[in-house]
Length: 114
Image (tube, rainbow, N blue to C red; front, side):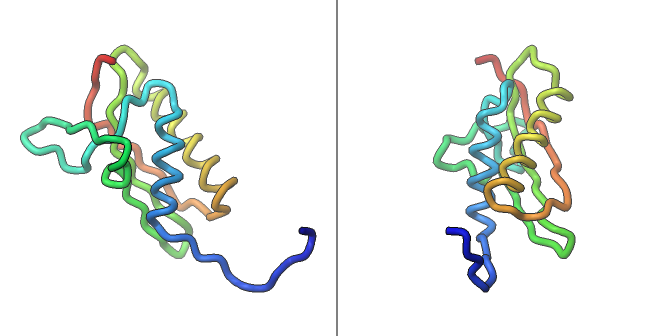
């Protein structure tokens, strides 16, 4: 289809959260998602069906703002994993959903041995 169809495309924040979650799980060093609030200082590893709980997506005038809460693998460089995570999320949102990005915040909630 080479024709442009007039109209607007609205993508739900939940769909964007799914894109972010799937991109995050393919980054080396990420064990899984964590709940945003760690009760008693213990980060809970979320199952794959509950990825959205570890991701917060907010639409602003400047674009989409993403907060992601992850647990990383013991022995990996936190800074490198975080940078790779930001790059993977940026790629997924700009290529698949074609939304502008206002910012991505990575919150490391814990470290776990695989």
